[in-house]
Amino acid sequence: MLRIGLIGTGAIGKTHIERINTKLQGGQVVACADPNVDFGLAVAKQFGIKGFSDAFELIKSPDIDAIVITAHDSVHAQYVLAAITEKKYVFCEKPLAPEADVCKKIVDAEMAAGKKLVQVGFMRRYDPGYRQLKAHIESKKFGEPLMLHCVHRNPTVAGFGFTTPMSVENSMIHEIDVLRWLLGEDYATAEVVFPKSTKNTDTNELKDPQIMYLTTKSGVRIDVESFVNCKYGYDVRCEVVLEEGCVNLPEPPYSMIRSDAARITPICSSWSERFPEAYNIEFQDWINACQAGRVDGPNAWDGYVAQITAAAASKARDSQTKVAIQVEETPAFYK
Ligand code: ISE
Image (cartoon, rainbow, N blue to C red; front, side):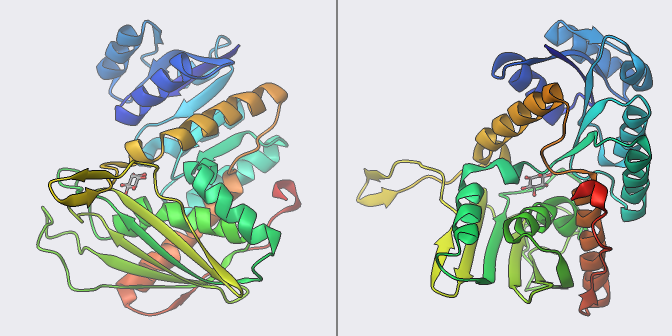
């Protein structure tokens, strides 16, 4: 049994405790902590697990084999680095750290430790729909991919303090990672444009929607629409246009309802409703890999490259220009 300690006991942290302890095999969250000490201890009590007042003590504890970090983005790095010092496997929700140079410090620390220990929570790589797209692309049956048209809509982000940069850094960061993984290549350029803005934002700090354009090193052209206050539901789409065919991300399998002289097919209302299977597969794989002594999923290098790309897209948005993305050669350690 892999004894897991979780840091960051907010909504997603609690969901992961429940998921690991009731749905998955081979691991148990046996302890938790939160930067808000009393809150962390209360959640520990709620789940009947050990509460730590100090997250660093949890990381060092000989009773903990592996760490899950679901705390606020701004504190991820300090806990990841502490786990690397203890040579413990650590799963960190995306982003690895908001700043690319901090991600690079994690990469350097991990390489110095001489062992891959870090996995980043880019769960879309585990979604069965994206896996079908990847299998189609890799089969080469339809030739080379040329263009990708993607949509990432949330019903609302009211109350989350969502700002203009977050559309790239918090929302489209998922596409930045999953499309790089789908295509198996790094990006070359980024641009972000603003269509007419919706009136439905709760703050003047957010321009919504936005469209991000990426090109890959081989010239594949990608457009991603982010609309975080679309009002009608949670909608994620991806169409891959290849030389001899197109493949689309499957829609969630809701049955069509005929009622009141209309045909209605429901749409998810939130990301947690859209991707539960991806999260379950992701964590089961992580537990299995930790027990086998390896990291299989998105690693610290992937987390670093995602932040380099997001930083370029942010620069492109702020300057309203096309920005080149400079990613170093992947070190042999991560190949
Ligand atoms: C949120 O943080 C997520 O990770 C969701 O998957 C994404 O759809 C949402 O836009 C983000 O705010």
